[in-house]
Length: 288
Image (cartoon, rainbow, N blue to C red; front, side, top):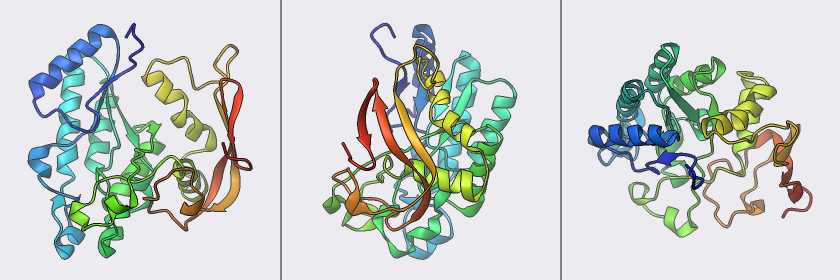
């Protein structure tokens, strides 16, 4: 922690050995940093590439059951309680995970979770054309799961918004569905999707709460003096026009990659100006 480490994570490769994970959490507590975990039980997930259900069966694709996430969320709750230390569950996608987190947080367990835009904007129905831009980990799930995520954000069970940004070259995605890498671009559409769905259409949360989930809450999790406009805070600011209507155009992306399922989507709300350390580094009108 003295060297500047703000968290410990498995970086997408979930620790399967519970004893090893326990020791990692205990050591993280000793140095005062949270543990961030990608929740995936490999014994349940196997070679799954899409949500296990109607569409996986119809399309003949290996299924990735919701229980493969929920089992690790339950494990993490037990370890957070045992070790009395904070574990953050990344990119929650399943209704059962939301229920487990809600119950644990009500008991005061040091556990939290985050949501990615694609898991509330899309369902596994989107995979029926075998478009690999709809392949992500965890996978798109059902409408019931989407509803649970909205509910979890509305009541504070899920209190951080994340992108799970995963750019890939076009040739990497232009292969058979089960051979393509997981992941999509997130950074350039994340804010627009969340604003459009959470604030404008579903009205699950207000704009102040959305900003809190992007800024204050992640900073608090990582114990960083950031995410506020208080005197003396770093002048790292993103200016937002919450009512700006725009169409996602992958050809206009700053990224060299184009693997997004949102190309052509009409959204309401967008970042228009970015300031880092008091200096403008990007604007919608001029770019970088």
